[in-house]
Length: 399
Image (cartoon, rainbow, N blue to C red; front, top):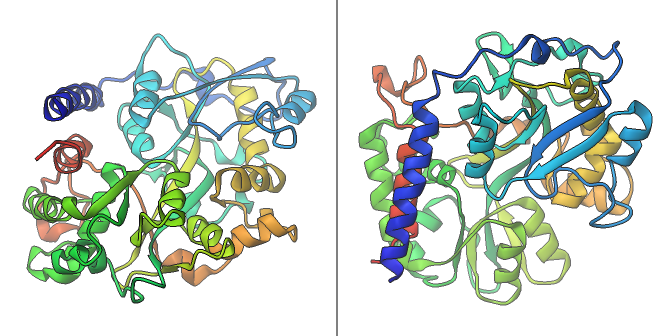
């Protein structure tokens, strides 16, 4: 029954992603309204957003966590938002021509597909208050063909987490993906549950199998993705949890169910301060990262309010609240204040350390066309549909 259930899930998920990707070239051009945002103009009085849990808070979750009410009071733009159940759900809602969201807090699984489908409008960065205060590297992540499609909001990085009482300090991703090493901790390994985790396997293979000639962990040829699949299949018996929420991995380590895994600096910091003996190691092959950015909907009907929101969420105060609430790093380094929670979070992510951030390869949505200069002249790469199918088949289906 488990295998049948996941076969149905695979078929539905693959079909949904295929439909969205197949329509990527058929979206409408952004409306004039979406392009016309101007901070000097009056807001329209309303703002309609799409987010994942935690990206927008108005005090209903915790009284002190509220960056919506001050925005409404200052601008007159009344904020409403819908929380998507998943990244796939978010992509589907933003791609629906009958829905007219003004903006979306898009993670990397979503942002590339919205750009490809023309469901996001280019951002006029000169109209975004405080835009230049955001980290310069993060400002380039969603820049394509001289257009910018997102305003950086929050980010995290994927490191190796290990229990110092049970695991020697790991050197690289081979600790998770080399079969002999992973089997030493069988049943006590945790991995982030997203197709984009394939990039970490690609970094491991880039070093372990140089003959594959992997250049970019987010642009893989069919041969390279097939090699990733073999690694994931061999790793599967050792994995205790594929985690989606940060608390899941924290709970696994805290309860002794996990000894080794891929996780964030925030998770390592929480566990370390709780006396659990869990530390983070920087993989020798490289670090991957995830950036959530605010994007303007191509069919936005309240662009002035949306541009005011872009400036508001780029501010140090809002990013400070949002980063601490979500356990992620702020895109605005000025958000790192002296209060204990924010200082600890920024120290864990090494915010402001240019060398550390330059060492992070930020996730992009995989696409069929290999980027110029990548993969030694190969033109055909694998897209998010194929990555999703491989991920479901190797991590979800019963063997």
